[in-house]
Image (cartoon, rainbow, N blue to C red; front, side):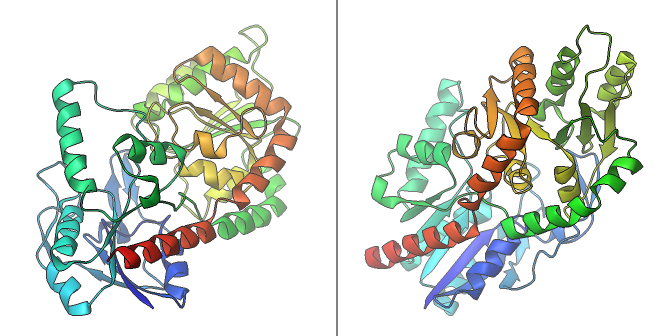
Length: 395
């Protein structure tokens, strides 16, 4: 039995099912330490531009504790975030065999790494960095390299989430033997079951949205903010018109909210088409019905460390189109099979990719569903155990 302490900023909807799975494993005794509880209550999400309260359980099925922290409960900036007062005491008193830290952008995470090192406890690190957007400024680039070299020297094992993330660690000198695949995954069973349930009510949902059942549907489900580039999708959609006047055959549905919504709605209104809909924010329990409804899902972001919405929609068996700045692209999007990748900002290439995805939506969707079966929490648990075994040998 390995006693594992996991340090993470706050309860996260994507991680809760994984933590329950790890906790249920007879070989691991897990305790989770959170820096803040802000996600358990309704909170203002600047990206969505509204109050958010998740409607799925976040802290059930595993042992957890909120650290005694001072400072802001959310990471507002580098110098406005929680600072823990008792990490070393917890590690020493509860005699953990390993420490697992999520990311390195929180002071508390660095505190956990330093405390574990001082106590001789091996550290496992899992982060989202993918190397796609590295600093161009020489000073920033140098400072980042100095900091990561310092941090990575204190880490026993690295839990990489995908191919870009693995390459990132390799580029910073991490040896292959210290790398373990713990892929960024979602609760596949949950999303598949919810999609199946939603399928039975698909026609009713179509009627409620006044959608012609004979027309395909393009779906965008993310914050309506600049970095997600929903404006590119709207521009590409206009290119799907046969003459620039007639509305395209597919519908375009925007699910989500954010600062760009009013601008996008104004641009959509200029077309005079009734095929563009803005459906607002949908919570976790509602989103599988949106996935089931669509034929093609598009994520055109200019920066996306991973893009878990792609995992989710693949569980509904759908074709996917992503920009080349989406971190999951090399792992989940098989070019010309279950989807297409396009150069970010290239609206013409995005339109071409959407045309392909609509024409091949059935076969691409089948491949998506098969592909995502091999990218699950079970692989996460297996990779974590391999890393823990390695850490015990090195301890």
